[in-house]
Image (cartoon, rainbow, N blue to C red; front, side):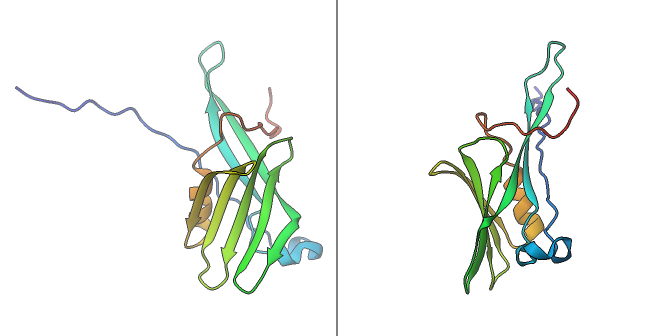
Length: 143
């Protein structure tokens, strides 16, 4: 008797690595250099009437008014342009170069991700996708 393992369903995830803010883009915000320009969380909603899944996204933008820096840490908050209880805190440990993100719904921590470098941290950050009740960003896609 031969036993075969069932073939697993393919698993997909969406992760986005944002551009880092560069000092020469706008001298007014040069102090934010190195931080992500935005954070884009992707997802897939149930199909339309014909069964086609629909991609969705929520985009969080940097809020320069929340920037803070001390001897050990640089940090800033990211918020969606749409009304939302969600926000993301991004930190950089100066001595190690470790980036960490904390996604909140109000005062509740939803998820945390980090990495030894920007690319790894942002990959881990965005691959968790959107939460079911997050507002959806209008990314200019045709309806």
